[in-house]
Length: 169
Image (cartoon, rainbow, N blue to C red):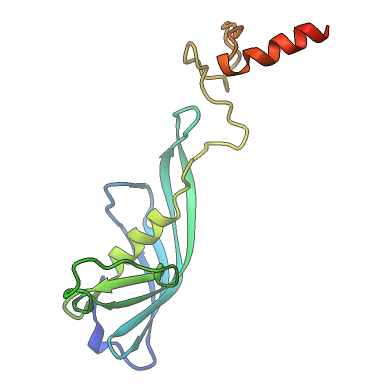
């Protein structure tokens, strides 16, 4: 949903959205629910709220697809993009990481929602905390049972330690 920033009233706008969002990087399974409060101070827009959605992800250990719930609380400040147009290189500082930019007096909530969902995707998604993953040799899913592979190889960096243990005995 798009808003003309200059038309946001002084008291702000509170939005309750249920949107189907298309995101190439994320498989969103359900409509995204969002409660967003937009306030305007001059050209600056302050967005606060909560976004929730169910997404499909791939487990980083066993490679199985699973569904997870993402809930994101956010607070961000948006400025006109023309403020940085004159600069060749603009780098955000630590204090500005919750900063965004808009163009042509238009604020797009769909972009805000996509951004917040992507920021809240786990770096290493797991289908379960106790997921064992795949066998390094045969690729069997160790969540379904043990495989018959033998792991007698020793990491060459640790071979010296094994020699020390043998001497001690």
